[in-house]
Every structure is written in C-alpha cells, then in structure tokens.
Amino acid sequence: MSKADALGGSSTFDAVAQPMSSRAASFAAFAGQSAAPDTRTPSENVTHSPRLNVEELAPNPYNPRETLKAIEEMADSLTGRGVIQPLTVVTRQAFLRAHPGHEAQIGSATYVVVDGNRRLAGAKLAGLDQVPIHLDDTLADDADTLLESALTAAVQHENLDPLDEAKALQRLVEVHGSQRAVARALGKSSPWVTQRLALLKLSPDLQTAVEDKSLPVEVARRVGQLPTQQQHAAAEEAMNERKVRSRKRAESKSANAVSTPPSPRAEPLRAEGRDVTELAASLRQRLTSEQLDDLVALLTPR
Image (cartoon, rainbow, N blue to C red; front, top):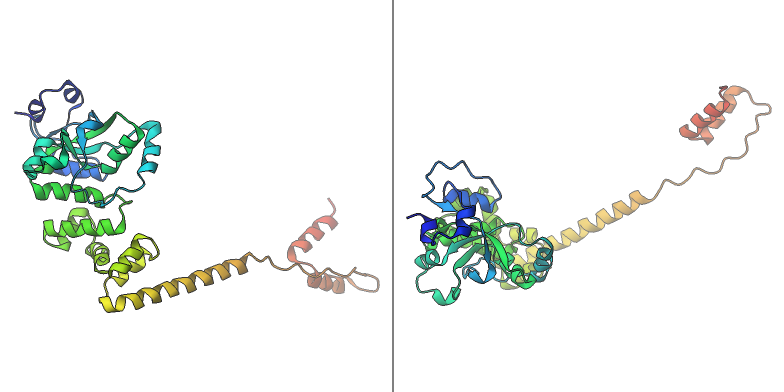
C-alpha cells in the first residue's frame, strides 16, 4: 500500500504529491540542496508538501533546541508572507513506531515536526491557520534515525545556539559512533566537529559566559580543549589580547582619519631680480605637485 493510500487518499495530499528519491533527498531538503532525479515508482518513498492546519502538528519532543528563542521576532516575520520554508514532519504513526509509549508527549496531533519547531511556534503566535509541510516517514524508521534527522537539520541551521549545536553534535556522535563519521554525514571536517564539541568541556561558569555572549564562542572553543584547571586563565588571557588588538585597531583608525596638515601659507613671491631657474626652485619648495600643475595650466596660452 502506498503512503498516500495509508493516509486515506486525501485529495489535498494527492494534488501535491511529488516523488522523492530516498531518505537522502530529505537531508538534501534540510540543506536547501536539490535532490537527485527519482528513479523509483510512485509507491516507493513518496513525499508530499501540502499545507496543514497548525493544530494537526506537534513539536518534536526531541528537538535539539533546548529553548525556542526570539519567537516574537519569528512571528513578526511570518505575519506578512507566512511560512515559506516547509516544516519537515512525520506522521503520528511513524513517530510512535520509533518512540512507542510517547502518546502523551504529542497529544492528539496527527503529525510530529522533525525540523521547523521554531517556525511552528512562530506561526501559532502570529495566528496563522496553516503552514506548508514536507512529509517523509522514512526519517522515522527507528529512534536513532529520527534523532539523526532532527539533529542533522538543527546543526545545518546557522542560527542554532553554540551550546545547543554542541549538544546536538554530541548526540550525533552517539548515533554514528565517532566524530569522524559525524563529520562525513554533515559534510564537515573532523576539526570542525572537535572544536564545537569542546564547548561541552568548559566549566559551568564559562558555559554560562558563552550563553550570555560575554565570552566569544571562538575563544570558548579554543579554551574548551584545555584541562579544566587551565581554562579560566586561558580565557582571561585571550580576552585581554582581544582588548589590546581592539584598542590598537581603534588607535590606528583614528590616526589614519587625521588629515595631512595643510602646507604653511606661502609668502608672496617676488620675482624682481630673480631668474627663471631660481623662481622655479622657489615654486617647487612652496607648492605641491598638484598646485604646480594648476599653475602651469593657468599660465599656458590656450
């Protein structure tokens, strides 16, 4: 039975059904990449992108974002044109197959959001009735696949908080078994993963400093790779170096902004008793090259 048949042959879904090649196509959708041409029959791994009522959707209980921030700003941005990027969802049945016994967490919702929880919250706050969705139950084959789907989507969002990103990567390491495997899955380098995971090794107060942005994340990633007892001193030293560099840049910028002082006002020239050579030498001493060019232009017959 096809997925459309399993969903009851909804005319909404049938009207917008578009075949996708595989689970990999769904990950490509997360990254905004085009999927490879589909070579399968319509009955295999069919995906859909209709619009659904927000009441039919439940946020993902395993959302890598521990808190959904700036929902008001998201709602403001959605008020004009609505949600443009579809939310990636799985059916209630697929979610419960991967996480049996979690009915209470999703309530009566028909679908569970894998990627787009913040957009869903913003849409509700903005009073939108419907949102576009991308449905693919292959993202919920089992608990690990569902977790990997949500985490991969979350990490690919540039606005994911650094600590949330680090926690998502750590959970991906647990799924894939190694940092190198995670790097391959995300199309990143192993050092990229290592640097971000270093935030989880920071002392609690330094993690708090990262959250409130008093400790730059670039500094925190370097410091996190040091033993705990060395982290505070290293962080303080790095911040002091940044302040010195910042002050020097400001001083250099200020110095460059000061215009070249004007040449002293030249005394009136007296040509009496001087030959042309002496007069030219005097002019070269008193006038800039631009001023000399202007003088020559004035004296040259037209």
